[in-house]
Every structure is written in C-alpha cells, then in structure tokens.
Image (cartoon, rainbow, N blue to C red; front, side, top):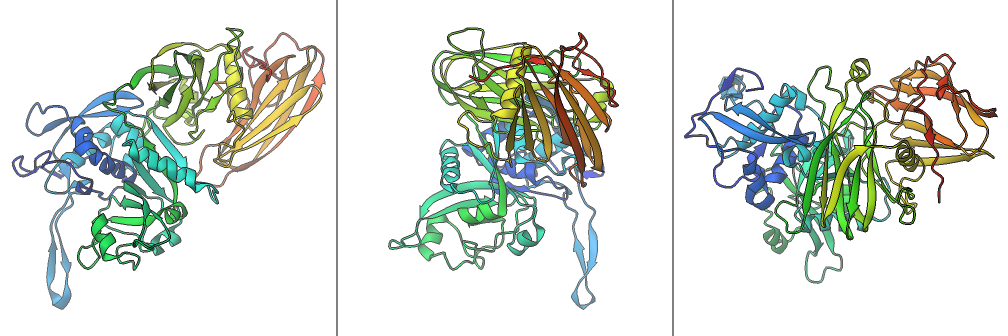
Length: 587
C-alpha cells in the first residue's frame, strides 16, 4: 500500500469499511492540504445515500486489502491498498498545575468518523497512485470530482462585480435540482478569510441550497442561503446567518435543523447568504452525475496528443436536437517522472456547413473551461442541433520541459454525455479544421459575441492585406494572423526580451506542436491566403513574478520561397512546412 510506513492496523471487527450509510460528516481532513479532494468526497457521500462512494470499492477479496476504483485522465483504474494507515505517535504535554496530559496517537491523514475506513482508504488509494500523501497537497475540486466519478465537471468563476448574479444562482439551483454535486473554493485573501472564520484558498462542500427563505411570514425579503461544510470538521463562518447570528428565528432554526452554538459545537457546517458566498469565494465547481438517468448516453475513449503524434479530432453526427457535454481529461500530473507533466489543452467545436458538405461553418461553441492552467479537465455543456460537428483539441505549449526533451505525448481521455443518440468517431484532423479551430479560439470565443470571462480580452488590428488578433488570458498572450493577400507573403518580425523570468516565448511550426525559441529575434513568412498562430507567451511559473517585452512588425513582401513558414533570425526555429494553415474566411 502507498503512503508510508509506521501505520497502525485496526482490528477488522472494530473498524469496518462502512458503518451504515456514508455521510459527509464522516470525512475529516488530516495534516496534508487536500481539502479539494476531501470536500468533494464528502459531497459524494451525500449523493443517493452514498451509492457512488460504495461503488468505489470492489467486493473484498481478502481481509485487510481493498480495491478502489478511480478515474485517472478519463480512464478507469483499480488501485489496491491495505488498511495500514499512517498515525502520529502519542505525546505527553504539560497541563495546568504541573500535570501532564497524554495526547493519544491518531491518524495523520484523513480520518473517517464512527470508526470506519472508507474515506481514509479512498484518500490512501489516490495518494498511492500519485506516489505519496504529500503529492495531494493543493488542487481543485474539478480534479477530485473527475477522479472520483468520471462524470463531466465544470469549474466556474465568480467574476468580480458580476452584475447578473441571478443567472449564477439560477444555474446553481438548476444543478442542485438535477442532483449534481457542487463545491466552493475560497479566495486567497488570508486576512479577510480568517477574520470571517474561513480558511483562505480552501475547498468547501455545498450540501444544500435554499431559495426564498424568509425569517417570518411578514418578512419582505426572500433570502438565498447555502449550507456549506468545511472538510476539517470544524471552522465556521462568523458573519450573517452564522450559527450565533441574530438573523435566525427559533422557527427557522427548527425548519433547517440548525442548532445554536451553545447547543451544538463547531462541526464545520454553516449557512451563508449567496451575496457573501460571492464575496468570499472565487469559484464554484459542478459535477454532472447522470448515473442511471433514463435517456442519457455516454461515449468514452482515449486519444494521443503529443509532439510526434498526428493531430486528432472527434467527428460527431447528431440526429436530433440534444444536450451534449464534451469532456477532455488528462492525468493530473501529480506523479513525478519523465511523463509526469501536463499539457495545456482545451477544445473548440465546429459545425460543418449544410449546403457545402465539406465546408466548415463559423464555430458556434467553445469550451467554457479555463485555458492553459493547471486543470486536468476541459468540459462544456452544449445544445447541438441535428448536423455534423468536429471536436478539435487545442494544445499549444508544453508545461513540462520533460515533454519537450523526450518528445513523449500524453494520453487524453474523452467523454461525451448526450440526451439523444449520436455517432462519435476519432480521426485525423485536417489543416483546414486546425486553422478554423485556432481562429475560433483566438478571435471569437463565443458565437453570440458575449465575453468568455476569465479576464478575457481580444483585440483586432486591421491592415489592407492582413488581420492580426491578439488574445490575452491569465497572463498568457497568443497572436493569430491572417494574410488576406492573394499574391504577396506577409513578413512578420518578432523580438522578445525576458524581464522577470518565468515566461516561455514560442513561435509555433504547427498548431498543436510548438517549438520553444530562446528569447531574441525570429522572423516568419506567412504565404498568401494563409493563417497561423504566430507566437505564444505563456507563464510557466505562477508562483514567482514574470514578464517580458515584445515588439513585432508586419511587411507585405514578394512571393515566398518554397521553404517552411519559419526561417532566419536568432531564434533558431526550424523549417517544417506545416506551420502555415489555410485561412478560413469569416462568413
């Protein structure tokens, strides 16, 4: 079993796997910072009487050994662990009056209340896969939900000053009514969080939502409340609607089964008003479990995404209007080694034109998940009319230098969950489709023209014969250029200077396989009627200050030579004729 020695092995008759139904308050976090994992596990315990928690365990083959089923990168894996759990040594501490107080040994990591094992063993199974308990330190609920359930996950951000919070609340209510799991992540503001009784950069379970709560029959205001749990099993909100808040009436306490602090101690469960949640939490995560729901279908598979593998895509044939959630997953990258790094990735969905079967219409959809972050899941829920579509994975810059050095690819799991029948086929991606997908990502994040959020900014710079789009998100910058000339090439000269470090500057020969250039100068020729992603500047270490200075110029020149897109300059970029992609004209 993974997770270190020095553990204690409880007697099987005293510590069963389950004692009745699993509950959220069974889960208690230990000394490692994996609240993101345990808060999600606690939420899962509340789903259908703990049905999915129990399904994580295969029938026991022998005493003291357990097979735990997890989803890693969209692929189901079985991990065998024993019931030896790391524990702290008993200690003697000085007490008042010169007395000595004995502190008994206790589990070092997750403990399961009511003398059970299930939560501790699930944590141990994932720690074993990742190599250690310490590898679980820090993460996001979207990873945990995907690992524990294999179902689609959406990670959404409370935008600062967001005007229409009614839509956010409606989405959360709709998700709860559908039986989806939800979690919250607090803002990384230690002073404000601790003053309010919260923990900064911490994950909490959402146990319940209450809409239209009134303190009395004649209360003119309808309140929106969330019931939240801290996986530590202690530590509660101190503001409005806290356990000792004067907003509670005896009748309302009884209706919501919320006892006062005098009657019931701090158990980590508390209520907050929705407006306070938006103020103190910066993201919420929704796991769309549709297990056993009639009419829903799921298609799964894997595909390679890497430097030496051809570009791949998923073709969809939809027969009637339906809801479809598309998810791409990769290994969370917690295991150290030459293949441990994650690749940045996202996807766009394009629809083929109806009148010309081989043509690509302007993209109608784009994944809402963040791009080029540490997340291991990209997911989006779409409404698809009958027709033919293509799902295009996008991967621009490798986050791990090991991938660049070894040339190894990464296995991407895909999942499509739909309310109606569809046919899914994996196939090579054409250059035309790659260009259309990249153009959609850089120039028109949503078909309705609405912002995609996440501090998204898109600029369009027009000249007589060329259009350059600069896309900025999360400190990363990409530039996509179209040469509209029919006869003249476009010369693009770039110069970058590293200022604070921590930035990778790249000039890509292909959409999905970028070659990193040293900081300096590079030049490129974009042939007539072609478009390409010209450069990307990506923050690779967000824990330290980073920055760069960048200059570029454009010049229409004569017909290009037969060589590839990139040539000359101090960057050392190689040839390779696959860099320029056929330009996709907007409709």
